[in-house]
Length: 429
Image (tube, rainbow, N blue to C red; front, side, top):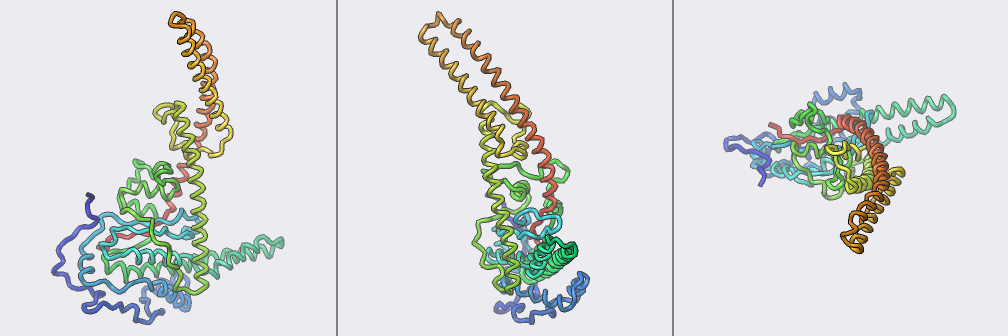
């Protein structure tokens, strides 16, 4: 039986926090004016620094308020008191669907997942999934700016230089504007989610880069631990995301990814932002299809590895072939390797037939002819085994080239890990 994911101390003398109702539970946030007035002075100053006008700030504040409708009434006093003295032993980390691009790391949503350790802080699965769904919409950015970006991209294919230049300018402006708005919405959404939901439950939520998460949980960053777990289709370790999560498994709380389907993340949004959310989910769906293709490709390569092991190939401690590197760099449709495998299978069948024939002759002629039968067997085997060694050398060369490519790809993948982002839930105190 594992240890509980929290520790407790006495809380009899704690006074009720200001956000905890003493009488019947009532969420006062649902009974206040939802506009710029719900922002603090520091919020407004911060948003002005991002280049937004007062009108834009009011609009984005209203959008964020709509995204906070999932928050239930405040927890009871007992829950708040208990949560204030309980700590998560390990933080909860929810990764994005895939590694984001350098220009737009927020292009993809976070995976829909839940950790049962949150239940002890009165963070229920339904509420937590609603939080993930709504932050995805906040980060999608306005659809009208995405439409302008696509329009600019289309103008970029025009033959006239002036139209092409105008299209590039429009595309750049819309892209930057979309990222600014998405960043503002995300900043406000996280701040208000903490204030109204996570803080009263003794938790805090943030978005962190992989390096920040690694430092937080104490994951070795001196090269003594592999950044990515080995490729393993049976364990679901195929993508960079899954392999990184496997490497972090001992440092973060376990996740449940088999959760109910989304209940319309943009249900409380206007039509324009629903389109933006749909576009983001479509990108995520495209990534999932790509991952399924990767899984199919990996299965082909893993089958080849098993066949090579049957032919006598060992791991890097034997022949010098690192199968992890080979899986990283090998092609799943290598016709020349397929041909060599076929040749090897034919040669091994010949060896089997020679041995079988010698055994039959020995049984028929008796032990008196054993010396002559063995001489003939060795003579027949000599040529066939020469062919086998040549095939094995050719296979070894090809595998060596694949391993070299795998080492190069591993280095690139390790760098991609640095672009990963996570929703991180940790103890407030």
